[in-house]
Image (tube, rainbow, N blue to C red; front, top):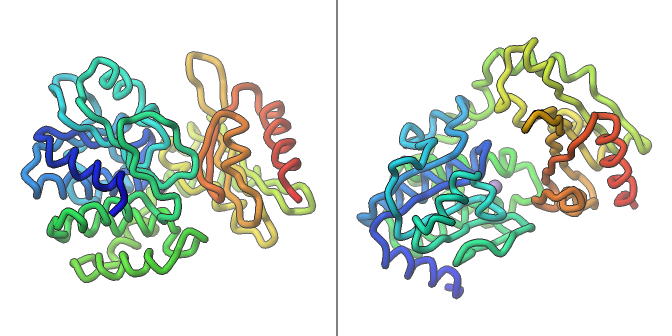
Length: 327
Ligand SMILES: [Mn+2]
């Protein structure tokens, strides 16, 4: 057991009330890790509050315990311990959580994460960039603490793995990933049930959005870079929600020979337009470096950032940076 793991276990033993949260716009790893960890802590007799600033996307409402996720910390009281899971820093959980920490409402803060980029926020950071998902680190923690893994915990943790490995397809898939997944199936997970919930339960509005996004597909650098654009007019036309853009970067990524895939998604914050940029790498390019250049972060193969400005300017900056990273 490493020092951080020991410190986290001590912190858990020394606490009664625990808050568990994850990054905004949560994906399967963020919510599955939140719920898997929180439900496990309840088995140890802890009082747990589950929180996510943006709540649960419709697609993830099948996760056991998801109905317990709170979207506000108002009246939540004080905590002995707070976990920010799948977060590169405590700020990833949103402004309300940051203010909550600043107000001294949590005695100790722990980050559990597998991203390459990680800030120095939090008291303890349990990090493993070799782990396919944050859920796998949570699983190891729960096993180390001898928490009995029930079906609800297993479903949440299995979902973290399937989400972040794209069903065991991405380069973060390793022997431990399969071992953990296998154990979780032994704890009662039905893999086909999770796959159907994650990949064959899209709302119609998402497919209508895909139909509008596809014509924006463009390639450059001799087909090594491909991108799509999702602007606000498309949202309106399709009746789509922000969560429906999850995975759209996989459209350019799916093309043979593409090394870097990009999705540009229009956002408005404080009136000024900016673009959320998702980056995926199939080759040697480290997209976390590109994202970091624009103040974002992530993994070598999957990263994100935000850039202000009109689309043409933003694209030329981002494509320029990618061009510099292509060998
Ligand atoms: Mn993750």
